[in-house]
Amino acid sequence: MNRNTIWALVILAVVVVILIVNRGTVSVDLLLTSISLQKSFAFLGFTAVGVLVGVLLK
Image (cartoon, rainbow, N blue to C red; front, side):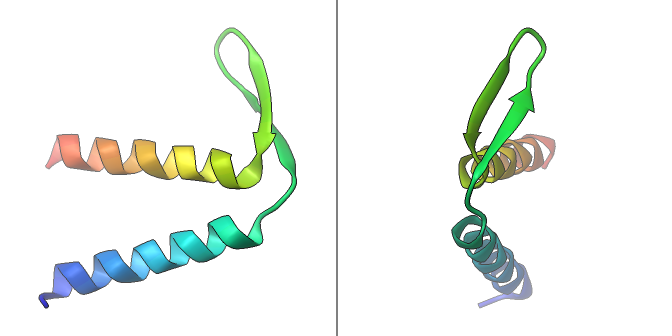
């Protein structure tokens, strides 16, 4: 395994731990509306957007 793969696995493990630990709801304000959802789903969505941006910029 190379160094980038190890870093990716470490970051993935941290994200999984954060998603498991955070419970409860949060209100997310979007441009036109506000939605209420679980914190873990909000973090998962933000992580997915970050990965998508990173892939597109690469």
